[in-house]
Length: 569
Image (cartoon, rainbow, N blue to C red; front, side, top):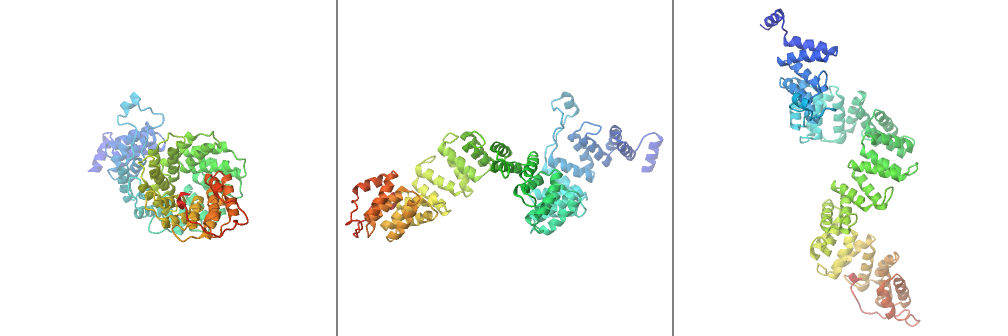
């Protein structure tokens, strides 16, 4: 019957959808896109799936018509719903990445609004993308299988499923799809599945590289540079990086630039380093911009240029590079390569802090607490300190304790302050250990406990905290929190005095003149005079009361009583 209808059509001058489709193919071959459009339009309206797909391609590419993703999707969908694999695959791509307004088209143009009432833009829709990618992949479209693998691996709009990603990547990779070979290699190299297999990853990267996949060249360079799945070979790494870099891969350009900067695998050459890093930077590679900042600030064989360094750090910072944001903030603080400007420093620190950098959160919190570059605001300081503390920043935990202790941003809360200080001290903060030791000695917010005070002071002193050395020396000198130990007291107090700490010198004067069983007023005077010369008021008072050294009292063996608590010194 179908043959009879076709024959009748020929007799009466009409054509079949298949004939219209074939006519469109011939017109397309000779690049007569308008004739192809007319022929395929006739076939498409009659339900010919491939004609619908090819009409979608014309609108997709702007061949013979004004480029319009909405009309393209309309025709692709009709073909896809009939099971056309290529149409399904292209629909998946459009929905996954979205399709913006064609360049040069003004959306408010009245004529275009009439011609394209549905608009000219397709928004991203991961759900639709997954639907059509899966349909095309299950239908055997290799490119869709590779894309489905990528979707499961990336997790955009879908929960990552590395087993599924490997399944679909492998299906396409074994059929020779270079993108899938690259994706499968990446999965195996990173151990995203059950276990990493860098040797197998290398084999897949090689297959993709043989098909001139630029990123495969880059990953081969990375493997040779790190010795991942192959023997480490910086010369081989440089070869692959160069190949990818010359093909325009920004990551490879950056990697090659770093090899030249460090003289690894190639002769050190700061000018070649700068050239390759700049190529990557102008493509928007923020890490390359950061490295250009380092190169210009340190020189590395070139004349240092802090102005250019600041420009590159700022450019990387604008792209959201947290490390660059912190560096440019420091440059504004120091006036290095840029005018000194605490407001700009605060602005950059806050940007880095807003991205979750705990060190930046600590520093901007300090700025708000001190009113540097911003209006003093203890509430905001506390907020930033809390964010940094939640990420384990010990200094931030200590600062929160001090705000509670001083009643800044919160009501004064000695008990709460002790809890924060204990947390910071347990995390190893020497400052918190010192403050906690002093609080335990004085009984501020906590039951007085000299033994615990001595223990926390020792921890801080062993980390080099001078104040803790003084307190621990006084504890041992007076026998607070443990037995009196003059030799240990002298050891800690002398260590602090050697760092020009007046309080330690005063304590040594007291020790030799009062606390020691073998008093030495000559030594006592010497230490007190040194402390007084540095402005220590207690040393001045004690000098007035101290007996003048003489042969009879220079080494008095009489021992005296005990005076004040060490935590007060």
